[in-house]
Amino acid sequence: MIGMDSTPSPSSDEELLAAYRRASGEGRRAAADRLFARYYEQVGRWCLRLAGEREAAADLAQDVFLKAHRHLDSFQGASQFGTWLYSIARNESINRAKRSGPSADDDSEETLIAIPASDPNPEELATRNSSARRVDRLLAQTLDEKERIVFTLHYGDELPLAAITSLLRLENSSGAKAYIVSAKRKLARAVERMLARGERA
Image 1 (cartoon, rainbow, N blue to C red):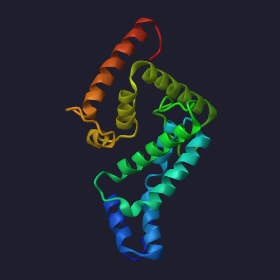
Image 2 (image 1 turned 120 degrees about the horizontal axis):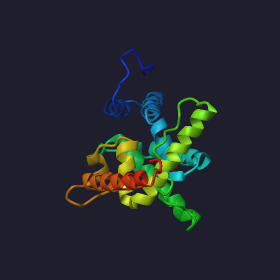
Image 3 (image 1 turned 45 degrees about the horizontal axis):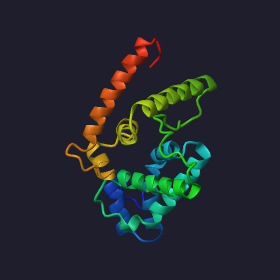
Image 4 (image 1 turned 90 degrees about the vertical axis):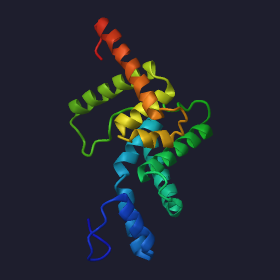
């Protein structure tokens, strides 16, 4: 990574934000670009899960980064930077769903599959997509919406439970942890039933 000058490039979100706030002009823009570049793939995964298909996900991701760029000065660090970006992605997705009417399928296409860094071979892609569809089906059939969101944020996007509790404004005493415990219990029972029927989990 090339820095704005001869000093080492900042490596953490906090350092990049500090560099952004100290700089001006091209240096400020470069610091923002480096910060957002750290989240391109992750935001792409979020948008694919929220939008359900790649073309809509690409449009959504573009809107997310445009909005985040415009409001970067307002980010005060009350939450993790990634949590702030996810809240923008989710709000933009909800707004799009409202504009498109009742046909929008809020969060029903959630998936744990990541956008690959390079194109896999067709057999690998088919296997991956088949596995993702099975996971989607199992989560949709077994968990309620809040459990599904918490589960995929924690295990799919590796957000810590405290961040999820804050992001989703969970007011129950145990926060996101309660939804994880409930989701794991339901999924374990569902898998047991599937195995008893001779189905693949």
